[in-house]
Length: 224
Image (cartoon, rainbow, N blue to C red; front, side, top):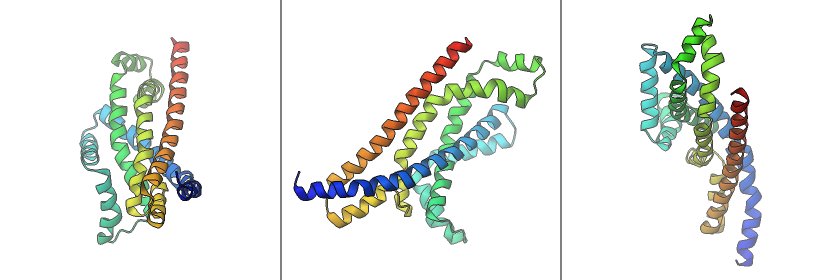
């Protein structure tokens, strides 16, 4: 490695890491939190089989799972202004990532809900619980334990997908890297460097996922 390239990489690392901590991670946390609210609500509507609303939920999932995330970002940020709707880059990214991830996570949660034995619902009803009490106390806790691993994988995938937000001028770490590349003309080294930062974030989340799975497994053994 040449001295110049080494200096560029050392100088660029904090410039890449900082927007990762102040933009990429907050975007992921906020969007995924909203997505989980959407996912649970949509999954419960489908699980309950509410007519009309169930069809709306299926349509929402069909649209957001069937179209590219990048296209959705462009529609919201560049397309909606034609209708007089102007959204700042970061809120636009949060909106799109939340809706997109919510559609995928809704199917994960729905499958987990359907995996809960029907006999437990019937037992809860016989004990005098209402539908919402049954969902909150019996069904959802078991379903969320089942859904934890795939939902964790979705969170890790979202961290990497946030790089697409650079296309709507969100100054996250990939966009910052592009600016440094334009100034230094060292694309290979700098793109590898930002890839390693994404790998670092994903690795930390993977460690948290494994820790969470062990805690859930220990909790299930205590309940058994």
